[in-house]
Structures are given as structure tokens and as C-alpha cells.
Image (cartoon, rainbow, N blue to C red; front, side, top):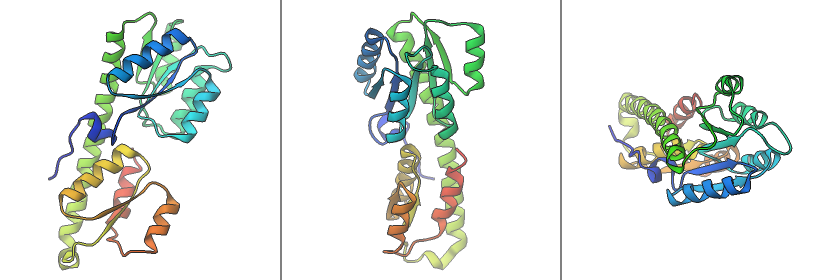
Length: 222
């Protein structure tokens, strides 16, 4: 079975995208610099609303969230993020650490909780940890999906003699690129659709092997 590398570039189809929600400018700029040096692309939000605005416009691989913000509770932002994309890793950073806030954060699906002050090294250890766990989860799902696809292809027999086109409809870049790599390595030509509308437009132009439906069903479980 084809394998997908776990490098940042291959797993996240480019620079890992981080949304950093922090209203203390010195901390925000320091963490952004550290992340940039490690190869991450960082969007900085100084308020909860600006974080939500950025979230609605772009796909992020990680949310780093302060809990004390000038306009709203950081936990509310986390709640909305998790409701929309529960698989997104979240690291809470706070200067007001407490047992109740830590418990609430974990109930919200937060992956790590880092009290201030902390060193750059401590921060990056936490970032690498949660992204590694996310990569491993994605690799497992991608591997299971690829195995299912191979079984369906084998059962199709002669129907696949011409190696037809595959339409992959998936809006999460890491999953989409991983599956696209697997299919490409097996000799298939893949059209990637990040939205339902673009998928429908593409369907009007080509004939596709219906396995893309199965791929979408599995990936939706993430």
C-alpha cells in the first residue's frame, strides 16, 4: 500500500497554518516569530471576533488560544471552532491558569493547556506534540481509506481497465492532499474539489469512478 510521509510539507500541503489568538502584543509577536522560524504560517488575532473572522475565511491546522480577550471569553471562540471543525487541534495559553479553567478546556476538546510564563522551547514541544498526534490520526484514517479503495478497485475487476478519473471532494487540505498522493502514486488522475459547487461543476465535465463517494464518507468521520 502506498504511504504518505509525515513531514509538515506533505501532511499539510505546504506550511502548517496556525491561528494565534493572543491580545498581549509582546507575547503574540514573540510566538509568531518562533512559529515562523519553525516553518509555520501564522495568522494573528488580537480579539475573539477577529479570530472568528479569520477562522471563517481560512483552513487552519492549529488554534493557539489565550482565554482572556478584550471583547469575549476565549473559551467561547474555542467552542465555536470545535463545533465547526471538532478535529482541529487547540492549545490554550493563559496567564490565569486554574483547575476549573483547565477542566473546562479539556471538556471543550482542548488538546493542551499551557500556563504562562513559558519558554519558546516549552511552547514548541507542545505544538509539535499535538500536531504529531493529529498527523498520526490522519495517517491512520488515510491508510484505512486507501485499503478500502484498493478492495473496491479489485472487486470492480475489468471495470477499471482504463484507469478512470477520480473526483475527490474533501475540504480539509491535509486529508485531501494525502489521498491525492496515494491515488497519484497508483497511477490515477485525480480532480480535487474543495467545495460542493466545484465538485458539481467538475462532474458535468468528466466521468468519474464512484469510489470518490466512499472516500468522502470515510473522511467525514474525522
